[in-house]
Length: 311
Image (cartoon, rainbow, N blue to C red; front, side, top):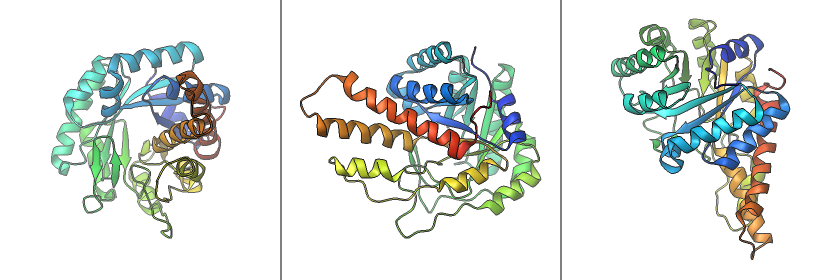
């Protein structure tokens, strides 16, 4: 099966009240763990690549790894650029085989965001590629995306219809209280998603796919493992999974997950070396890390996304 766009996947997700997981990938083991879980659970899948991942692994390596996953699993997979911040990087990914790109113009004012997004949409659609735009700014850090609490802002529902109609985007990322990175809420804080904003946006854009970024749950098991085996991560609270499942039952068709992948990988490798300090074969410590990613993704598919048995 070749790579697909998200158009039909989102339509089915919207109508079926579930979401599709968009998992950030950086290397072979992460891709294998994600796709093995999706294959076993018959779940559609979005594999997304950040600008930082392209710098780390190189565009061609990541594309070829995803092509190998297609051959191995025969899953419907979207290859998506996460947080493209310029026309040039979006064009490079479109020309290089991606089937979906995100142009993040949220750091611009509304008018300039519209102009940049529209430019990307026109080029992408001419090449059969779909586009995700963004309104509102999420707090936190993810690769090159760094937004302080002072600069973060919720999406204004009054702007969404004009933005979508003016740009022609195929999906829209909104800010309703999620945040990038592992340090979302401090102990004692009560995580809360602005479902009022989500419902307002849904009324203004009936049938239109909405995207949530920064939706890792910061699984406590992995934070404890990292700290148990030499780490020093502060306690943090992620987005409660029941809130994400509720969002997936509304108009949210794509939920991005990155930090939980990194935590699963890092925690498992730390544990392996603590228990096997003299070992040095990467196959020995990356194998359990890959299995940890697979189990975590399987949990997300069943408990959060609701995308099991959707293909």
